[in-house]
Image 1 (cartoon, rainbow over the protein chains, first blue to last red):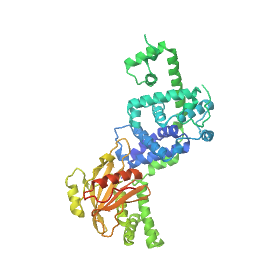
Image 2: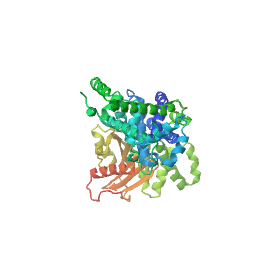
Image 3: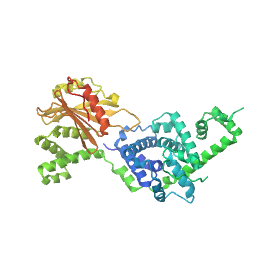
Length: 181
Length: 279
């Protein structure tokens, strides 16, 4: 038996949030939507495992997280974007407004974070989950979420300030970030 | 009097996220009042948060791509790999009976897959019963209501299957490898009967995975080598040992499936003479 219409409706309603989270993880629109696509497929294939008392968005974010980790393992290119492709990728971003300088470096700093810290930061700051909810999605203790968010903040701010630009986990061979704030 | 090192970045970060209890929040409030440098840091972090939201929130307002909507409405009960396994069977059938058989594609995919299994049997390849194991896996694993015939909790499962298929059936414990026995069922096999044991992954946070173990009394001439083959996402380890044929089937990475196969191999009921399986 396949997923009932009510379940599919809930998925449809959750797509915009899944797309936002996916976009923050993989940056370019097509890869992000591929991630949403595989998240939806996994959810539909395992709809019986969903406990309707749970928040479906948390459940879906958790599936997206797992799917993202699988994709990273499968294809490291999703993780590290070469700097020469940055402009091309950003040109494809319809959401970039007038203040391109600020946003470009925000994206660069976000992308430079190690994936564990980036996921925690995005779930708490952008998806506005509590530490306990983010811990559920990431399947780590809440204390781990707390320290990852904090370390991500400190690292991003340092890069945005133009300080210690070479200290990033994968900064090798990258141009220094411009100071913008 | 508070000192600047009273609170860490972690405290300040949790304060900004509203994750501190009331008492600790007030302590940080007071500390920030006396530490303009820390207060400035918190303001910058808040600005970064707002910039991140401003950067990503517009995605919420974008039109949802039709392909995603299509996925939600058109997704079938059977996952792609189940179809893939059947198609793979059909292709073998085509090779054996000739291209004239291809018209069956329209309505008789399952029948064709079974025909394919028979055809490979007739050709004397070892894949015949392994193909049936894969087919049985594809048929029962996606089944939400009756994936199994007899539940693992029922004590007589092992005895019942042992009597039916004429080889000792042991309920392998794969919990160390993250899988729990759901139960089993009896199946028709070319030469008689076979048994299928189904296992489901334990990890509650991850999407559930199922693997099946197919057991049968092997043909006298069946090769005994520990072998692996892959059809679409579906991996299959199979071997014949001490009078029993085993096929482990699952849509898992090969290494994960190998670990399960090794666990089964170590637990199989008959005396172990051959060396442990390796890739």
